[in-house]
Length: 331
Image 1: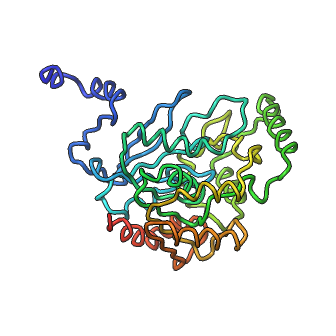
Image 2: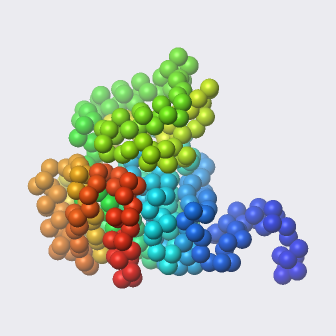
Image 3: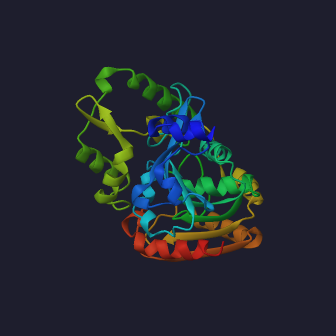
């Protein structure tokens, strides 16, 4: 068997590695993959693949990086070179985002798929214990996952999110009938050529900045995201995320459900809140959940010392990375 292995070409090794837990790469033998050399990884799904990247000490303790809504795993690209190389970082394109395969057309988006996809990742890499860095939606997903699987998560660090997000979002319609009609309307338009429109890359960047309110993210950060967040269409480009993700949620996930689920949260928790970041939820709910964290988490820390808007980890990674490194140095 060893003789046969030694005779395999690099192409043959790469092909066969698709069926292994980790894909083959020459840097594997050096143990550490530099952030700038982060390599593509894939996790199989019933309908395709979950796409992502890994870097750091490939044989080290795993830290899963979960990005925010409408972003992708390159959200962590500016931060990655400043993080300790001691750990194995795994950043995936979430359900409906980036290069991850979209679910078949027809069904509306399911909020819980975000949590299910994390469990798929954990099962694929056979993780027995790991930690999470989650920005915005990714932090919300991390809070839910750690509450449902408390024995798997050691430490959770959230970036500019304090509690799980209530669904539907406050700025979306709260009417289920209207949400259903909007879903069906988008479905019809997606099959009608007259509604198909493409853009230049710079137009996509500007549309993204505007959609985020103008101040939450700057064009430079969006250009980083567009490497995975756009795809060719016609004579230009369109966003690669699933357009259903932009619709109001048909399913409900309110404060009462969150109160029940969060009872399972036991891990160490640190929240880094951007000074100029949004709250998303009423202050009374936020303070209620902070009190729960103080009572039942293994440890709880809240840090609002970092100047910046919602994407502060992309705009000012040098401000955020030292806090992250210090927190995980305790592992």
